Length: 534
Image 1 (spheres, rainbow, N blue to C red):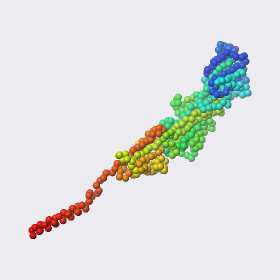
Image 2 (cartoon, rainbow, N blue to C red):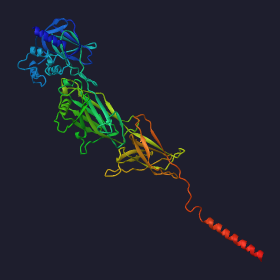
Image 3 (cartoon, helix red, strand yellow):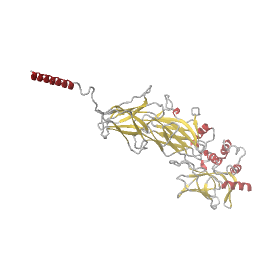
């Protein structure tokens, strides 16, 4: 008996419950558990062990232990014995309520946060007898589970409790009843993130700029909760939405939009390691399921734990993340400047540890990543800043990489004379794109929309009348304004042509006239001399 008392004293001291406060024993046969901070949930208690309750100082002791009324003991012993993690501690053929209690009174179960104690509570919860539960009742801001005979109880939130955003069911509480007041241990909600880049593997951030008809890459990230070890399975569903200004683009050039158009990674940020997942050979139940419908993308991990373990060949850890990368193309519906093109992402996740991926789910908050695109206003002017009409230009981009291929830009003109990027592509080859000319308006202005952060070349093809054509393309640099609404304005100056002599100087006629006059003058002189001599 002393051994049993010592064992249960240890057990009580390390119950899976924070902030436990023991109070003096009340009525001889009925006790209460008062749950503080219930977070809007109802609670219920299931008696796992029954026994005689006594006190040693401040420690409650349960002795003469037998199976309680809230558990199917035969099924529980079979489940404990057959569990991959707990089977080494329990034997369905020899164990009794007393020996099971003695086992969980020893290490590693004496650590209230140890995965084995959490696992024990999970297996117990799968073998409860619903008819014997005692539901809690509201008492002010607390929940009181009352009318409890002496014993060792599993206390949990009622499964029908509504879940809000980032909500979870509380972790199971194992408690020796002695009129106690407790606060539930809150299970963890996962964190998610969405980022975007112009490069598939690097440079991800909350926002990026792009030119219309160019690609960007989105990265979805879902962390596993800190108590992932308590889950047999963990369903994780990514819900992603593209804005009207973006279209889904395939990573692989084939006929179908499918799982091959997504790259999957498992990341452990604590260890700074990243492993690419080969999903094609994964079995059903482990392999992600992808559905693309218009702007909506749904990626379901039936069991994120099993997925991560298949990729890493290691047990899942609380620092593990799942990453998904896919490609999208900025289109002509893109919002120009302003708030940009926001793309939303949220996730569903398993919210009840004991039921794992077969239990209820909750939702995360929505996060987003933004793609900006900008406009430039060209002012064609003379040195005095007077606007010049009649100039025509083409626009293209020379990549910064030496030897990179020039990209031509084709633009669409609307009724107001504004040009928007429509297509970008190489100057030669089967996918060649031809530049089309743009004209300045009567005030010498030219507006181009849909340009990302880069330096473009504005080449003059037709100069204003009486002005010289530009010797070289004018560089147009777009800077990242990140939604500030400021507009890029660039002045392109043309100079008047110089007045030059015509070919042949002032012409020959004047010389003919002068020569005739000289001949006439000479004849007159000769005539006068003859008269004088004559």
